[in-house]
Each structure stands twice: as structure tokens, then as C-alpha cells.
Image (cartoon, rainbow, N blue to C red; front, side, top):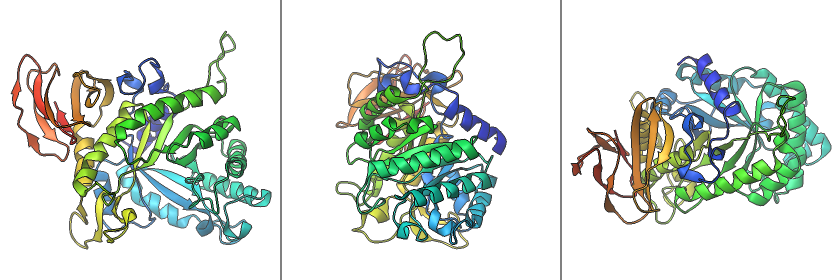
Length: 434
């Protein structure tokens, strides 16, 4: 797929299709049959990075895992070092390294600048206007490249909005950016607010203030220590909240009933640290496909895993162990990083379901069992796992000849098949059937 056609596809999915999870509100979550409105695998998958100059061979390895997006901070303080003078050259270099692999970019417009408000989050009118001017300069500089622009990172968290989060301060900033984009960069796509977890109170304040007028999607970070499948209920609740405050779309004058603008959800950061209590690198490898497939089955148009590579080597520091690959770089060797089970899981998932979209959840008798059907044209493939204890089930897959692989790519020998059904053992590790 060419860069141009891929850009067109992404924008079509993001802006033109109905909100998949809203198609059948009575069947909230996995049971919704999203059809052509569901995101395509792996075009809807991405990964967070923290560099503008990748190591040789790094982007090739990232692409081979099936990641089609990267999410990266566009830092205000490093691109405006003198008032009104902007230098985006390091980000130009990043986009050039991504271009041969048709990887798209979500830039986070974030953080303070010592030139304004002493480096604090922009909370005065002068700082807000300077921030908005900088965002427009960035949008114009990178115009037409299919980027997504996210207004700040986790403004509801004291780490990123010190000394304490303040919804009204963030809203004032986001409104300034939204108005500036509408006036000066109307064709660029703005999203927000990238909340830490799904902070419904913070989100509702943003929606009440009118920010949905300016955003093409709502972005959240659905972190949790529990199973990723629990996000389904949160997504349903969030969709209802968005629908309540979404502006009326500008349809035909003949429309008798005003229609609300459909605003999709983006999971722009979500992962599990292998150093969290009760987790391991093997368990993290299981959770990546379950997270991404949960999002795909709930109509989340873009899912960005955190993180690409481990941040360090400290066994007791959870932040050092979110990566899909280990921390150490190996010169003149392929692969240039040692793959964790998480990387193998991403690569297997992306290859097995390439071009497929979620169709339905197959009922096998237990709410704890997840058997998801994905379709590409006339062909069905399945992912199956359980959040309960391991046990055997019979899956009515409707296929007379079956093969199965584990989530990290190894073949699975099926215990039996009969009349287009497969008997398999479900566990917390997904198995794929075709």
C-alpha cells in the first residue's frame, strides 16, 4: 500500500465511518457486529516511542512487528527556544525515517516552555496563546502528511500538569488550540485529551466546555492492573458520554431530526509492565494481543501500545519494563534488539489477522471465554482465550479444515475436529484458528 493510499484509508476510517461500537447500542462491547466500520488489523495498531533519531535497523524491526503508527512527544521547549522562532528539524528527520515503512505519526503537543510561565503548564493567557501559535506553526510545517495532533499528555495527572491537575486550566488551553487550528489549519486533525486512565469526571468537563467541537476523536489511556477485557464496559460508558455532548453534525437541510456528530475513541497509550506484581515477560506477551483485540472488538479506531522498548535495566522499576523489546541495542546484527514475548505476540497477531476486521463474539457458554471472529472478505479467522481457569471448549468455527497457532507463533495441534467445530484448550494465552 502506498503512503498516499494509506493516508486516505486512515482518514476515511477516522472521519467518515460511523462509530462501530455505537451501531448496536443494545449489544454493548464484544457482541456488537461492527462489520465494515471496525478497524482493520494491523493498520489500526501503533506503539509509543521516545526518540526522534532511531538506531539503524530499529524502524525496520518496529515495522516487522506490524506497528503502523508511532506516537511521540512534540515538545514545545525543544522546538521554540526563542520566542516566535520554531525549529522542527529533528521531527523532520523522524518522519523521513518512518516514510519508507509507511508508518504514520501521532504527535503529542505537550508540556511547558521556560520562555513562558517559567516552564509550567500553560495557564496564563499569554502562555496559552504562545502555545497555540506554536501548535499552528507545527501543523502548517507538517501539513498534508496524515498526522494526528493530540492536545497534551495526561493533563489530569500531577506528573504532567504540576503541581496538581486543573481541568479548567487544561480546557482553556485546549480551546485556544482548537480555535487556532480551526482558523489556521482546518484540514489537520486534532484529538484529546489523552487522560491518564479513563477519567470520566475530567472527560465530562472537557465535553461540557465544548471541546468536542474541535476534536476528531477522543483519546484516552485505559491503563489498569486488571484484565484488558474489562475496558469494554468503560468504552460503552464513554460512548454514551460523548453522544450526550457531541455537537449536532451539519447534514442536509432536509434532515428532519438533527444528528449528533459521531466521534470515535482512540486508545493512544496502554500497556502492562512486566515488573508489576503478578506479571512477567511471558504474561505481558499474552496481554498485548488481548489488549489490542479487545480494542478492535470494541470499535477503537486506533490502539497504541506502551511501549516500544524497555526504558532501562532496573528490575524493580516498572517503568523500565513496558517495552516490546529489551533495552540493549546490538550493532551490526539483526534483529537489532532482543525480542520479548510481547514483540513476538505483536508480530504474530499482525501477520495472522492482516486485513481482517472484527465481526462478532462467538458464544461458547461462559462470559469468561473470549472467542472472537474476524472477517476478510469471505474468510473467517478466530482468536480464543479465557480469563478464567484453563479448560476445554468446542468452538463452532464453521471450517472443515483447521490450523492453529499460539499467540507467539508456534503451531498448536488440535485435539479433535468434527462437523466444522474445533475442540481446544482455552487459557489466558490467545490461540488463533484458521
